[in-house]
Length: 246
Image 1 (cartoon, rainbow, N blue to C red):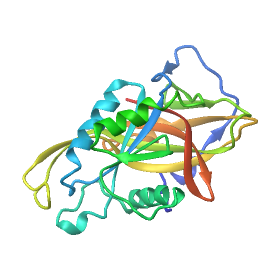
Image 2 (image 1 turned 135 degrees about the vertical axis):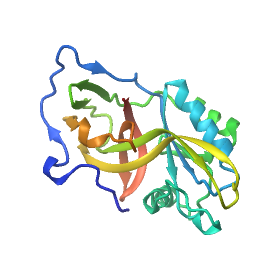
Image 3 (image 1 turned 30 degrees about the vertical axis):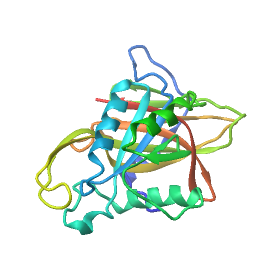
Image 4 (image 1 turned 90 degrees about the vertical axis):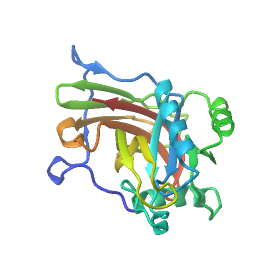
């Protein structure tokens, strides 16, 4: 899978150091119970109900909701304004990790472990009801222009990759062609970029420092930090997550 870089080369990937919590540092959203990834497309007639459902999940406050717009619907006649081959590849990687070659929209993946039809509310909430709180705490705090991330050790878990995902909280799009032609849509939690920051090691944990001015722009209003295991290079269970929104 190709990972789009988000940080300039002069910044390096991460700063690993002993994390100090200074007075006045701003704490972010409380520990979530789940990460829900929606694979969707502006060219898919069945996707709008799933897009709306994801918006509702994000508003609940205990779910990290992310919308990955795929590009394989573009052939219908409308090129998704947020579509990216990398996101289609991520969905294919999930399918491969589960021993399947089938991908579809809309699909929601819960905690990297369970895929369900994203427009079926009962299936989505059923998957969430079976999910306990993510086992690994991820703490985010802001201090000036720096975003600090603290992930404690936990030797009961296997090592995992720390990912940073930037997203746009809302976008209004008028669709002119394809299956949704003539509709004015509101999209939320739209993924705008994704990058591996480094490894979380179960014995030592990880402390990261991220420069906010380099990460957020008009195209990105939020950051999700996600700790996810891999299996033979394919995405596995998500252990922990936290978000920051300006």
